[in-house]
Length: 477
Image (cartoon, rainbow, N blue to C red; front, side, top):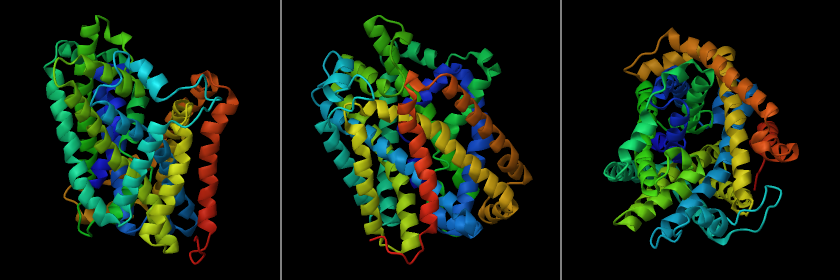
């Protein structure tokens, strides 16, 4: 349940539907499911196997594989910490909008309200601006929630996910049913699913499919290794990997119906084409959807509240899952109590989030997310496959998974881990690198890209070696 909660997050609601439309509509489902079965599920089995076999956090797990590899474990747990720093800010926005839904405070111009009144957005990332009080309060509330959920360890997580995994799914189904009854819903769904099979000949569509699967499942972030370490010794590893992966894919697909039924309704209500509406990223969640909610003939506040409560409950599982690997790593190596380790990490996380709660925060959020997703996680996934596939006897992990699994994996799995997935990730990395050199992200100057993209990745990489070198008996108090 915790692994499903981690995999299913805000990205399923606002990223998958948009990526699906941009890359061939219904035809995108073909490369998406090919990617899911050739990369997503095999890597999920790999990370579950490592965690279940090592019975420890990623740093300790990689140290068991080879003492010189401990730094990879620290690398995998520090990268999602950066993700969490800005992910929690988006949750703070959702927290504020949940309250704003009561009186539909965004009024008739949701775009003006979000960008100017709420974010107080500045003219460029070079202009930081001041801290936004509503975001700051939401940020504090979310980080306190993360601390409360994590500080007592895995038992508390189990109780939380028993509610936060099924509830948002139920709310999403309610929103989908409501959306499908709206005028224009069919046009929206048709826009979402109309297949453009010519896109299957475009290599970028296949790369987008692999990227979506890789990032959506929460791979290469130390999360699945950590959660698998808590599984019962006889737990079915392969089954768990299939269940988590398919639950994530199913939620993404359902979210497409939720989103595009409402987008179709909004287009019909305003008498414009769907292509004229901003449906990518934050625009969808904080501009397009609020505008549509305001136009609902009845119970607009109720459905607005449901939408943002669903986003918050989807997001909280992903948020604390990004922090748990770091706290587990610190607890395992330096024997600091779980409560103190969680307090240290959440405090650092709160202060790291402050830059994204300023007037220029949206710019920096998009910059950091772009580079962490397109480079940081891809490189970690590639290194994981190379080290576990080539520097370790991969068949041992396969045999470990098969000991407790109903679905047995064969040598084809070794081939996927050693050859297929590294090949795909290398192409992803090369294409992303070339694109960013030819066309710097959003046309920003190089100093901004270096500050928001290159420096965080290099810092995390170097810090991984520093943490590996600090001896276990050295105090971190």
